Image 1 (spheres, rainbow, N blue to C red):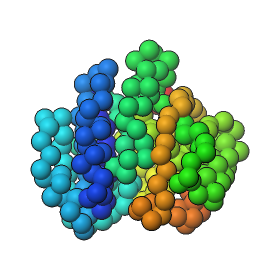
Image 2: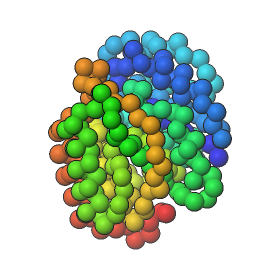
Image 3: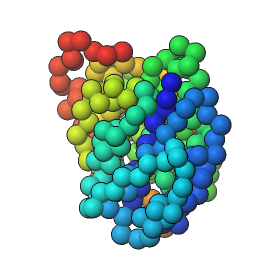
Length: 234
């Protein structure tokens, strides 16, 4: 199996070199590729990416910022692996956890795996950020009669062809809710494994806002009212 690690990047000049180094240093149980989409960065992110040298790395550039969802859509279109997982470049997620997500797939226990953040004590956490995440996740559970622990997690591992079949159209952070809503509408329940997480604050460049939470609720409601596909991919 080959895993495509998809990394959307926007104005992460200070972190992108470390993000690449960490992602490529992991001992994966399968072949991998790292597909980075520079989503119209206006700082020195492009220059840092231009100096990166690894046969497993491919860099694609958007001339203008289009949003995380659009960057992932580009990455998925260019992915060559059978499976994919999203890894943000902000160093909040630890790529050392990716093999833990792969384990249920390689063992034949799951097809879709989510990394579940525990939201334990941490000085960088915002109360409203955590409560917003829990609220959106609860809304998904109520609407789809499911019990997932972390809808907004970046770590969503699944077959590339499954993601393509979801036809995710949200250009921004709403893609997280759209992916989960479409999976749950197809009655595909993600298998969850605990992961580590280091939250960064607004002053460090945190981009998601309360508006993204409102959009996520709207997207979940929209997906709940749509008819389930006749031949869902499981």
